[in-house]
Length: 360
Length: 235
Image 1 (cartoon, each protein chain N blue to C red):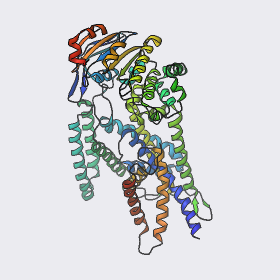
Image 2: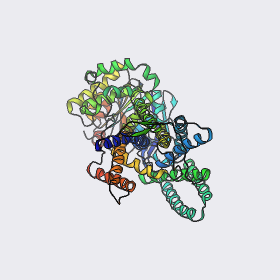
Image 3: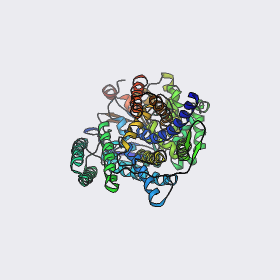
Image 4: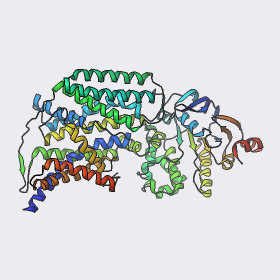
């Protein structure tokens, strides 16, 4: 009995964990190359979930076929946000590019966040969604003008500036999607049967999502190891000075890795809807951002493959602890699972800040 | 082959280069000497395009290339052996060398250049499948030089290639530099703090201090001037 339950948990945990892992690879890739923590991570997952939902509802396209579309949307969004917002802060070289003056960035970012916080309170009180979108557009224009006419700098921006930028990008996405689709939670039903394994029952959708995650992880691994383009990106991760003297266009690799990371993240949103095809709303990304942080730390933060294995561990822990806590009267297992996940994060950070796994 | 005219650059509000003029003749070793903080590294990085030139010109083979970014300079045949090696430590020796052949023209000649590097540094052929981070300091420097050769450069700039090496290895590195000139016919721009060894290897010498060129001449002229030696070189 207990053995059956455990093996059932193991299977469920691994299937879930592979999707979690895939959902974190983009975060780790971006951190590995740019040393930028993408606080807006969950918002990109949300964009993927909406892509999946809309394609299914509008044309009955099964989520599997939404994967390439989501990846393309992610790559495009990545390029847009990289060149529109992030580049002046992370681009490692002057090389004739006019970049932002740091004082202007600091001031702009400060004003931006202060106003965003105020606007968010106002919008909750008075439903001023349009004002936020308009405001964000103005900020973007401001940033763009600064970018064109600003001074030059050579050193990297402080982490706080990039955190603020990715946070803002997340809010921009959430509010834009809310404008388009309202904040109502949606869902769809892609029923294609279940696989009864005796110890547990797995819907085919989950199995496909898990298999898809694994495939993408393997493809990414091969791309990094075997192709010239993948090697170039790896070289930038390892030593951007070395990459530069080999003739790698480091600035372009930054743009490419950011947009690849976002592409992977948006794709993972599609895979997650195969797991949980309900509760799709503009603000669904928050919990995924937090989970991905835990997973990324588990996997050593800067390695996409580490993230994948971190995801497997996290899936097992989450599934196992849910079952465990459900045994006790008076405990809310869902809340306890989250509680437990973050206790785990703290313990790992204390004992092994470099991550559980050493995978490069 | 390379001509630098009144080049100015720096980092943020700090200006480092204050208009040095210099030339590197084809097929010769041109050496830049000077104390720490003289702006030697900044000069090399500004020539490569990793640091933006604010004023002045970099002319390569008769063309003004001042504004080109680093990867375009590598395309033209300029490369840099950076100070502190900057190897890809998790990659094998072979992978590091292949990364040097990143641009397409270099990739076409990959095998030929690899043979040359393995003949210059036989130890690298033995260790080709070892992670570069596990090599000794001297071997790592060989990989760094090899990786630069893989880009098929016409001009190779070296930033302190002997730094942190044992005296015997320093000799070997300087021998390699001379072989690169004699056997491969490369043009070399060498930045060194090791003035004595540098003066022996070089065909022409510039003395740099506080972002400008303070003196220049053949090694014999520099050696003969007590004034220059005492003021800038400490030998």
